[in-house]
Amino acid sequence: MGQIMAYKLYLSSVSYFADIEDIDVKANDVDSHKFEKMFVKERDEIVALGQKVTAQEVKKYDQRISTEDFKGIIDEGREDEYLILDMRNDYEYDLGHFK
Image 1: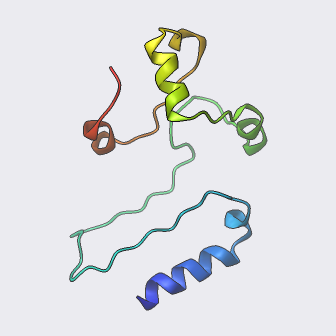
Image 2: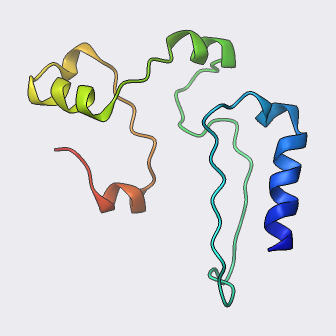
């Protein structure tokens, strides 16, 4: 539990994470390590778009919608009016997705 508290304290001390209003750090107690190995790799881009995008550009076009509104867009066949970028990994996608 001490490591979790230390990590949360670290996150609160780093300016990069300071302005994220909806950051939600979650943790569960476990009885052993859940991953045999863990590799962390730094990437220039999470999703390869072929061009660099600044944080300001992302913020400019950031439009959040509710799940109900998103479902309405899909149900009404208006998805061609939007660029929908699915950022989930294969595991998350396999858990559930829209057709």
